[in-house]
Length: 250
Image 1 (tube, rainbow, N blue to C red):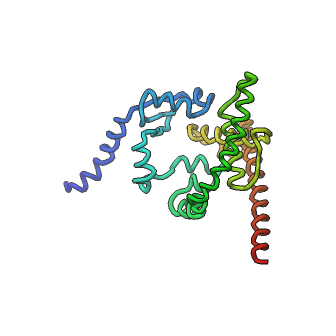
Image 2: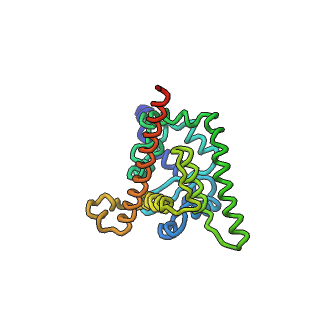
Image 3: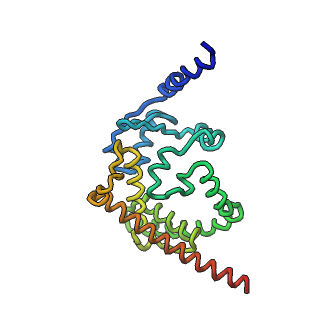
């Protein structure tokens, strides 16, 4: 039998053998759903190292945190990998945006944001980042002085929202001081994305289920809150851009 035929027939078995040599961790979906996703992943990293397989029922994930492997996947050999399930589970949140997109769609989106990644623009944003971080430090100093306990993950999320608001939309959410519900809505949506990545059956695709499931009702309400806020901000930016263009022409 020709060698190329033999290679074709036995290559899947060779690839499986390589894959099977990667350490395997079996996850408890219930445990992961009860806390931030990165916490159990970090515990597994300490046990299994920089690359391991994580199985949830019929689904298997390859978890990579080794810097050299990450560089190979994301930079050196990125064309050999697709975003796969990431694209699927984020579709209800981001559609065909930059993060879940692949191929030509990704390249088109990437070209659109290149100016925002220019070194001079990033340097100009440093002062903005510092101002927002200083507000967080003041809040932490006050909490430390009074002996108040704080939830750091929530505060960091609020800080991120404030920075994105000013950097992208020139809008101050001031979420470190005021609770607009946006951060909680984002948490709800991201948690749903985690649930969908591990669910053996895509029940959210059942038309009637979204109307009777309390969880999906909350997710849809959170999505509406996020989308309404984004639409308002985009509308304001368009108006401001129109004003600036008019002034420039005049």
